[in-house]
Image (cartoon, rainbow, N blue to C red):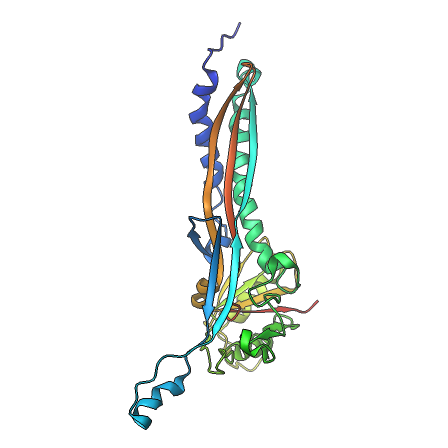
Length: 305
């Protein structure tokens, strides 16, 4: 006969925590946290307000007039991130211990931790998987899709629009076309933003093409030893969680960290809740966060399908 002490769940608690953390940390290839600006939060929502650019003509005014001009800029768009709460329960039966199903217990805790990280990764990838659609959860502060042909310059200049939405396959020539377009992005005063794209974000189906374009010193489409001007300009990041095999993205990684947000209101944690009639014990895993984009000028998307 197996004897289980009355405090069996208390003894099990550190084991559950250990294997939960093992599950959280077992995936070393998560891409989302490397793309998003992950930050904390102390409120139930966060607001990201932008301001318009300061025109460079202002620097001429002092010498021309002798007066020191005040900085003048328009109010930009405001994006509100409202945190959502995610909670699941893990239940362990006392008979699992009685029947020596220790592997089943640890696997359950490990898989719960892993599932939480996959949830976060899938949500982050959703920003890109919905980049071409005007679905409400994925709209930006300017009320259009992340990759759109109608991004307004500002609330005050909504009639003037810019385009970061393309329908081009991933080829060397099309990479050059989109790169040139991104380098022409302007702020609301029509001054260049000086975008310098340096990352190709692709689904696994396009990784080989992206590597060939970005790494080949010679033109992969030429038999005459022509140089490949795209060589060395881009890092390539494949992402398992991109769901469209034809969609790819060109990114300025420095600017991305200012426009792609993830707010961790309550970091992922697991808590022992107690025992019910000495036959089952429960733990709850919980996290609160929000995510999205507040500015688009760091990215161009292309979907040839």
